[in-house]
Image (cartoon, rainbow, N blue to C red; front, side, top):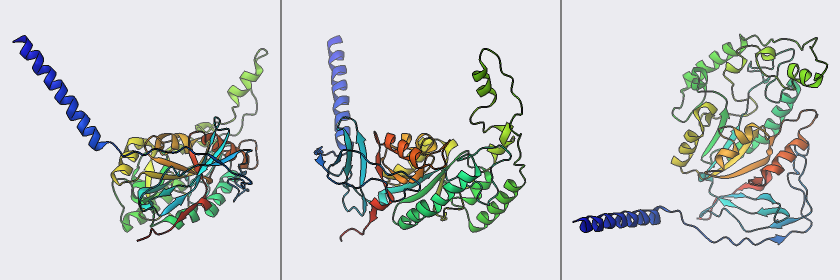
Length: 358
């Protein structure tokens, strides 16, 4: 009896394993053998050189071309890209052919600050976004000149244009913007704009001034100095209590279409991932701010997205924070170049849409 029982148990185990193998065989994604063929390029022009006011061009001694990584059937979106490899000892470029209807553009943290909507940098010493009003205005010009035209060129062609913002889907922004779950009516949008104006314009954007005196010990004055006067304090002392609880709008420097979707960081990455997958999105073109922080580490940052999607960082459609400098050129170059170790980088002029052949 025991022998029959053991034989039956082994049969069930084998049957289960066979079923599992059969299911995985049918559900596994098709694969291809990629020829990692590197062809040396000569006299290649600098990368990210179209807008040197915003991004310092990328130059290196060795450049290669490799075959396309993404090669969709009936592709209509051509996205040349590059990455850096220490082991190959140079930059590797490759053409890519994507389906636009399987592609989303996501803009990370287009904060509407110092743009006339009412949310502004607190005085006399508050910090937000790029941390000074002058630098916020500089980033706004980058949005108007680079990102907004890029988005407009692909609106109606890509599956989605999306924006990520901090916080939850609060009652005001719920009326203003489309989300994963709802699309506001025209009347709701008007009401939301009215409530946003009132909320942002009734807040006191006044914090404490810089400390006039500090208490420094004889043994560790440097430690004491920075403990009492750090390089960045964006808390209530200088920004006023409640500043970060205000509903941060999408900047006025980008044209938000009623079909565009706002992502809220507090909802978490899984909700974004599942929404994109349910709608057949496999590729993401990533724009937005700031290259060294939000662009990589927030809900819609590339550290999350690159686990599940083919991500292309649009290297001239992002800016890094730039403390101690009057320009973000070099900081953006450095952070994009470092990201290129494990990400593909493209640029606005390398992204071209053309209707597929019938």
